[in-house]
Image 1: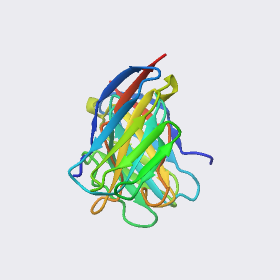
Image 2: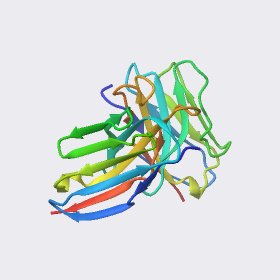
Image 3: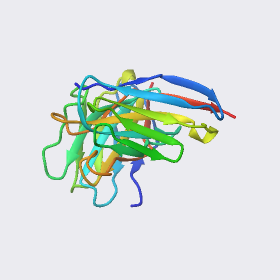
Image 4: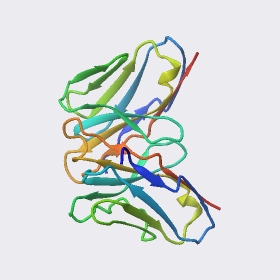
Length: 117
Length: 112
């Protein structure tokens, strides 16, 4: 597609429920990233996929968080047993190369605003 | 963890004024990028700087990478209401995690 697509754009869930957030990156982009942003603050790294390499999961805040990327394209971020502190905007980005090399940067989706009540 | 601190956190100015936003770290980065984010949208890349001391200009925006590649600045000349948004710096670590580390952001509001 023309850009990074995320769905849903908004999600309200009850505490304790599981949620799945979807990211459809730009076709051909080998790198995919998930970040979390609270209250218009900076971005907190969650997980990074690069091609067929093992993902870098070092930013996941707890074992309730997991993510997968199927066929090197679409990615799903799953949060189990959601807590109120999980409320945030979850942003997905993709890039053709490792971001920061040359002029390649991240292309972000518009995010999923998650509210846990 | 390599941290990027931005200052100021919030800036409200009148149209036509100049401003500078700073991005500082105790760590060295192999490159640094600046993004602007508007409400309800994801951040959009403005510029990438790679070489220590590098200066890049994008119309009224001037970006500089520190000589030691630990800091950067964004200067806006004659700010306009369209410059309003959240400005984020992001560094690519030289070692370790291969994803960008983002700063805490500077929220700029330009009043007409």
